[in-house]
Figure 1 (cartoon, rainbow, N blue to C red):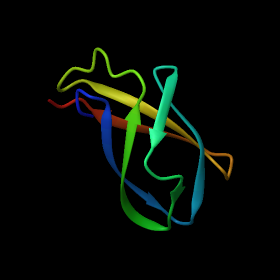
Figure 2: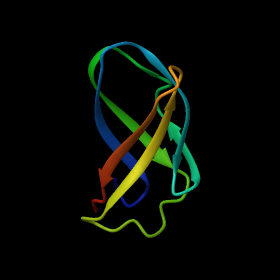
Figure 3: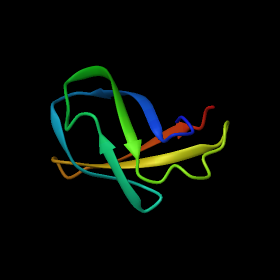
Length: 79
């Protein structure tokens, strides 16, 4: 995750699901996509509060999916 709050992740899915909501440290996350498609794909998210993001530290973005699953996504702070 960059210091301005943009997280780049690779996700693998066996089917297509919609992101119902997403959170980071209790704040909102704006996905650049609303659907995760089957297979492996690269996705970007922007967190609403990026203050305090430190290089090398780990953070979790939590995605709630249309199939009822909650997916914690771990990202690492970068410069």
